Every structure is written in structure tokens, then in C-alpha cells.
Length: 368
Image (cartoon, rainbow, N blue to C red):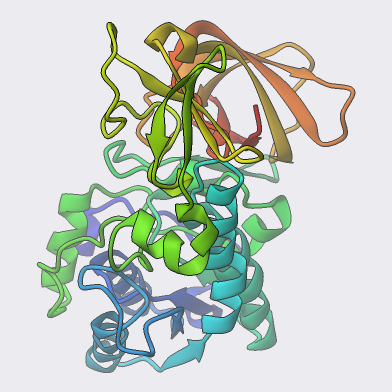
């Protein structure tokens, strides 16, 4: 059965029985299959699940890393036959991810908590756990490929483009990639479900987790609880500063939004900008959202781009990609990205991830 699938080699210089692998298990199908696959290939597997939130019983159904998912991960480990540990990271997750999520909204930006979670809790902290336990690799169920060529490690898109998660891993560093392994990058999702059944995992038909894991209600209600000032009433103004109406809190708006403005106008209006200093929502016509020039901060390069390098960039996870050119700036750790064609609704707080073909060369956070 296993020979029917192309399995990404995890370690070329060690025999499987010599390799200790920490597998980050969320309780879903993907990470469970990753763990079972390595175990069946002869690796010494240790499953680790991070309790990130929900100890108060408020975990949302269909989320990950809390509630039933923790029990599912433990049951998979027991049924396959490898040890499993639960680490309580709720305080760290709250500080690094949940509070950052609310603060980003309060700056008038649109956050991506999944990237922050990978960047901090899952990779930074769990990699330290991997080293502390004397393990050789940290394995996750992400759909992304790690390739080694001429001694260089590259991060590349998954074979299954519909499940590719490379956008969310742009902040992964070269040092982290040395220990990280992604055995599912060469599979299609349908293959993973087949493997789950083959290994006899009870979660083989479990639905994928949806949306942001810690958001138990709507985004606005979650942020309002974390930052009550986000629901203060303010003005809705046009791009010239003319008052058009009133809003019930900036938390209810994101750049590019059209619905929910409740303003009668002779043409469709969209959210152009959120002015947090004045608690104003700036709206305008669709052409005001079309942009070519992007300033990107907090850069992480897996391959340093040359000045004027032509790349493909993704400006959100669902974006198919746009041709662009990268230039340096006078500001430290920032870059200027010029798109070949206008793009609609570029939002500060989202990530700009650069690709050279299938390879992720890095990226940063959109700041303007």
C-alpha cells in the first residue's frame, strides 16, 4: 500500500530506526497521518499536542488544538502505538497570537493569526522542545514541500495546489527548516484520507478545521471582548473627508469590504482605509482600491532577492499570484514590491509572499 505513494524522504543520512521524530499533532487527519506514516516507516515517533486555548470549555467545534481534538490526537497515538504528550501553551498563545490578532485589528489592519502561530508557538517554541528531547526532526502535517538541492534547503509549494499552505509558512527561517519536515507535501488530500483508512485511524473522515481556531463567535465579537474600544462609534467619511454616515466600531470593517456600510450613494462604495487615530472608516469607489506599489516590513528571506528581481507574489492565501518586481528601500528590513498589474484591495496586515517558480523565497507583512 505504502509503495503506491511517493513519500518525501525525511532524512537521507540516517536509517529510520535511528531517527527520533517529534510530530506536532492537532487532532486532525493530516497530522495524524503524518505521525502514523512515520511510525510505519520505522521512525521513533513522539506525538506532541499543544493545548492553545479552550481549557474553560469554550473551544469551538471544528477548530483545532483544543477540546475534542486533543483527545483525538491522544487516541490516534495510543491506537498506532507511540507515546503522546500534551503541552499547555495557552498563556503563550494568548500573548503571541490572540492579543496580536486584536492589536492588529486595532491598528486598522487585517491579521493572519495562523502565520503568527507558526512563526512563534509552533515553530519557535516547539522546535526548542524538539531539541530538548534530543529528537532529530520536527514533523508537521502542513501541505508544503521541503527540498534539498546541492546542500541547500528550499521551501516549495505542495503538489496539491488546492491545499498548499506555503503562504502561511513564509516566516519560517533557514535555521528552522534544517529541523522541520513536511511528509505530506508530495500527497493529494484524497491520498491522505486513503492512508488514514489504511492505518485504521478513526478520524479518517473527520472534517478539516475551518476558519480561525480561537474565534468561537464572529470576528467582531471576539475582538470586542479583547479590545472593548474597538466598538466605539465613529464617522464614515469619503476619500475627501466628507462625512457620509456613522459606524458602530472599526472592528466591523476591513479594507475592500463593500457590504454592511449602510450608506446610500450613487455608486458602490468600498472600505479604502481604517483611520484608527480618528476612529474613522474611509470609503470610496473601487478604483481607489486598485494598487501596484506595496511596502513590506519584517522581511524573512530564505533566498535573498537581487535588486529588481522578478517574482510571483501572493497577497492573500487564496490569491493565485501576481507578477511583480522587488526593490530595496532606505528603511531597514523593508522592501518595495511593484506589481505588473493593479490589484484590488491590498490590505495592511496581510502577508506578501514571494515565489520563484514553486519555491518560496520569503516575504513580509504589508504595511502600506
